[in-house]
Length: 365
Image 1 (cartoon, rainbow, N blue to C red):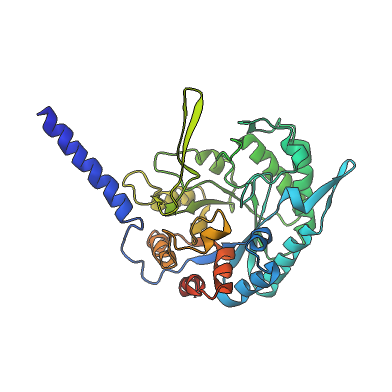
Image 2: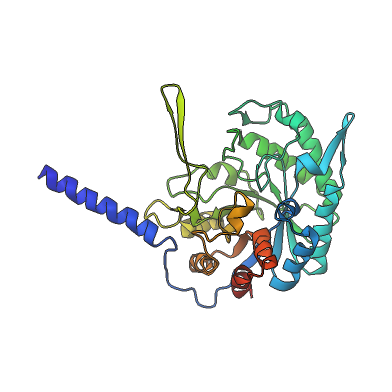
């Protein structure tokens, strides 16, 4: 009997894992007539890393894809610099203003992301002098030594940009509860302090959006953030479908670290684990009860790109997967969907590969 039970459980486990890998885009009934409000994230720095003319690529996206909104990050380490006891804007900040102005010209709304942790690698975009105040594994709270400067810079950014009426949200920090390579996390006490400063500084009282990773069904950490939201604020999550890591495994063994690099062709499914993967229906319902909209700020629309060579080879996530990912969110009734990968689409377009941009246009149009 014991062997039969072990055998049966083994078969169930194999079928469970196989289903997740074979069907990374779970199918549901198509939501007829339902059309999300689409946006995208954009970084001039990442576009430059791809060797693109950052401004030209950005304007091309606005003109060709007809998005409704764009999410633009502020980078503390490049867009301001210290001058004595104060902070001043650098020329890089002009790119952010240019992006907002061009968005307005194309009737596109803007979400501005500010704080110490904003989208794009390495996530914490802090000047070295601020980063040196932190230790590996710190939880950055409202008593952290970086707080006085961080609040000053938050106030500078909001004051400088508040005159643009196409800004519809301030996003305060990006996935603050998720650790980065330095194992830093941002405590909710600091998020609240920044939210208060932003609200006090913005004369138009625009709402705030907070976000978390696409939470597994058993992950309730996001409730720490939604508890800070007011009426008309919003909550964002992400939706990745085929993910990769830096290492397949990393183990300490008798004083030595054993590591295996993540195989380029191997991806891990995210949305297809029954009873574990994020349940967007429930997330939407929970946020509606609190008076908030749920946004997917990052829907995977590119493969994982670590080096330029990755962008030139076929990967597990394909151009046609954009449509499959979108259908899953449409079927889940997600009303606001932001696509992640705009710089990559433009890069592939510069190489004569229109598949990615065409896939994006097919769903946004």
